[in-house]
Amino acid sequence: MRSINTKAEIEKIAQFLKDYLLSSGFDKYILGVSGGIDSALSAALAVKAIGKKNVIGLLMPYRNSHPDSTSDAKLLCRTLDIEYQTIDISPMVDAWFDTYESEADNLRRGNLMARCRMCILYDLSAKYKALVLGTSNLSEIMTGYFTQFGDSAAAIEPLAQLYKSEVWQLSKDLGIPAKIISKVPTADLWPEQSDEKDMGISYQDLDSILWAIHNMNDLDEYPADKVKTVFKLIARSAFKRNPAPIPEAPCSL
Image (cartoon, rainbow, N blue to C red):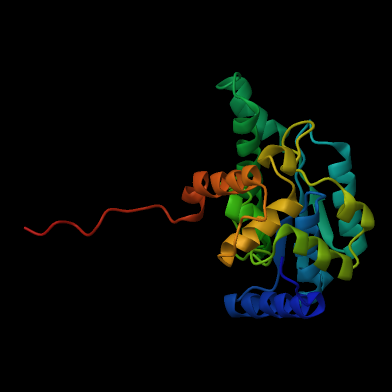
């Protein structure tokens, strides 16, 4: 696994966020704050880049979201001293499933939750004239552990070059509350959900194997079943990372 200069990386990302915002003609960022480490790091980097008065956090719990998610999100916003709003997405999610698709499974319900959050973010981004700040890391992107046009929708992705293990490293240097850094990673889309349980591999193993794949290193040192799991995650989510395909140019007469 690679070693990075966390302090230099923090400065680089902060400058990247500041420059992109200025070039876009905006002066604020808005993001969904889930109570997890990724949104915490994105928010902290934005505050470092453009100041706390120009960062808006949205807390968007569903009725069965774990209470810790909301309390940790509020803790993060208070720690960074940023403006935040809490918006319950239960009425809009339930309106669809209760009326039309009551037999939908957890995956479908979770995907709609993510997309409802995206819709709220983009609507309020227009209200506040703020760019939507992404929270996806490289480990999630490479394995497809995100909802297409849901939590993957953003104007800018400051963590997309960082593995999950590196997100934890940078978070420690930025003073993010220890409670958030140490908690079990979860999208909190249904009870008892966790990232590693869903993917079938720990982030430690995942990041090491992803790094080896990126650098075309020998994979023999890793357990074959874990390598197989990673390749399967990458392959089955390829469509999520690619633009929608279109046919070739029209045929000439």
